[in-house]
Length: 208
Image 1 (cartoon, rainbow, N blue to C red):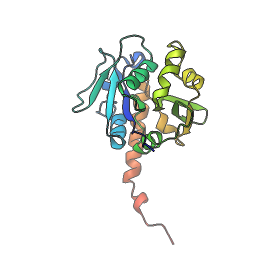
Image 2 (cartoon, rainbow, N blue to C red):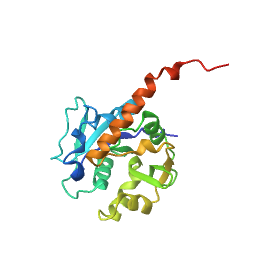
Image 3 (cartoon, rainbow, N blue to C red):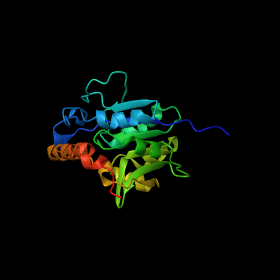
């Protein structure tokens, strides 16, 4: 029995970012380009990683990172997924949107090793919320995604192709940045986490 080839990690960066004023990839989150947060998580788990974007997408310097250029039209996230699958040469892709700064290597590993069964995709979810731009898409997803077209929302598309849901447990893992206010919120989350890591109470021995 042949072993399944590991998927390729793909950061989806082709969106217009209208509400935030331009490419999300270069938005600064605590003096660091936003794209570097999910990119680091994906690179920790997967050997082959690419960023997929439009030809006019502004990206920060990404030494050693493969950049795939998707067609200019249509401007729809499914185009990035379909084009990435076409370039993956029969391998699946673990896609992660550029605006998900709190995705962890553990979650990427869960997606990369998920058993999709008969479904063409497995997408991250938390309760009633589904995040279709964080998921494992197999080669079989190309045809149904293309057949559904580029008019529907991504949530409608993944529902129509019967994607499985992977519950992430922690809603912060799916926090995505769409506006300047979201950047401030994300910064506050990072500050809170940094304080928690340096809190002496965390290392104090438990009482008998």
